[in-house]
Length: 278
Image (tube, rainbow, N blue to C red; front, side, top):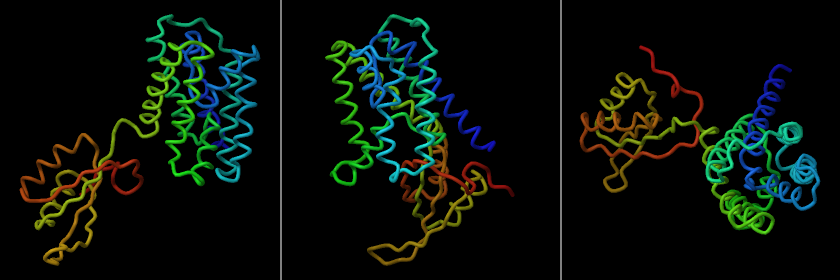
């Protein structure tokens, strides 16, 4: 129960932060977000009915439709986050901090991105179109990300007819800022890099990485395609800030070592977060 309570608190906090960015920065300057939120904002503008009602009513069909695809836990978490957004939006009606649309777009995008990122980290979502994109992905030759991007470009472009062309362009800027902020919140600033090292001095390089740099190393069996020589391939994960130090250290041991560096989306367990103790 404590775990669920903490999760609910995290979802409610994310919805509160999102509401602040939306109602204090974006909406007063006729800038909207994408997805169901954008549709709800335009519907509220055209009909005069409260945004708090539209955001719940429009999201429910998507979550019901995608229940079998995403599971009960995600559905309940998302509905709680959407309900929290609806409640917060009913109470937060402060005047805009700035009337400058450029400043409101930048800071509003950052704040709503922070809010959505927290909601995602706690297992929820505010946008029912994501579920529709997951379902459509099975029947269309496009990725989920591409489908969501298409939806949002259409929604944000439509805001030009409800508000103005300037509003539509500012909304696109806010959307991309929020998208990057979501990525930072969900993945962190400390980007991880995977390293593959092919070297004839694998014992020396392995010793260097484990003893001097404190990183866990996995030895993989490899074979050269041309000479069919058996070799060892070293694999380890380091932070972005350690890349330069690592390359220089490997070069000092084996100048001819082949080093491949690639991005890692996420890593858990092992000794990545800690140091190797000796």
